[in-house]
Image (tube, rainbow, N blue to C red; front, side, top):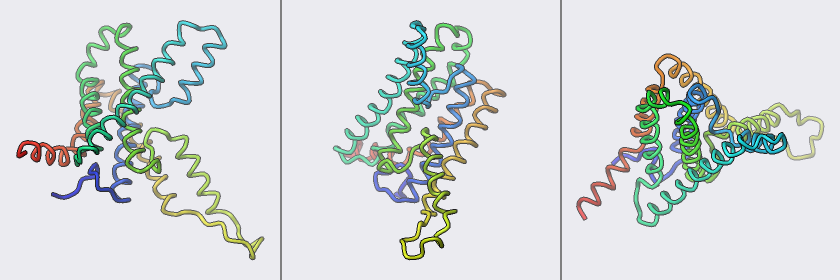
Length: 244
């Protein structure tokens, strides 16, 4: 069976391909989620800042939202670690795909029950925020673990920082100190960072437009894309289990 991007056997090409795809999904989910619930759910820097601001301003009724969002993102990352390590200890090819399959299921639930969220917004919006934060933590931990922390799909601040560093190296003039080692940019890393940022942006535009025109159902194609990423390793493990 041909190796999939979510297989346990990794390559740089597979990591980049998976990272670009997940960046698109993250951008679309984050932007669409903002239109749905009025907050970005992958931005833990903002969540922690909001927590500090609300504490300083005495807005105690809002503090629990930031705390719950942070905990949901954290639990998402922890869930990925549990699922991946459990699967790796059993030599399953779908170890990295299983958290993404869970993400696909949760996005499908989010898309299918959007009408309920609209009808009972006050009741369901807080739970929707927590669901999206959990999804973002789940996904970011997958690609972080796969690429050994070299690639992230929801943490654009870090990507832009790394991009700026590499661009600074690329434009650095080495002629002033010819006897010193030259400052050279890692062009491969520069290309990867550009692809990830670009994919997130395109995904965000598609997510926002899709949610504006189609509503919650716009998340269903994202769910299907994740299923396409993971179905081969999952099917392989199911066949092995069935024959054993």
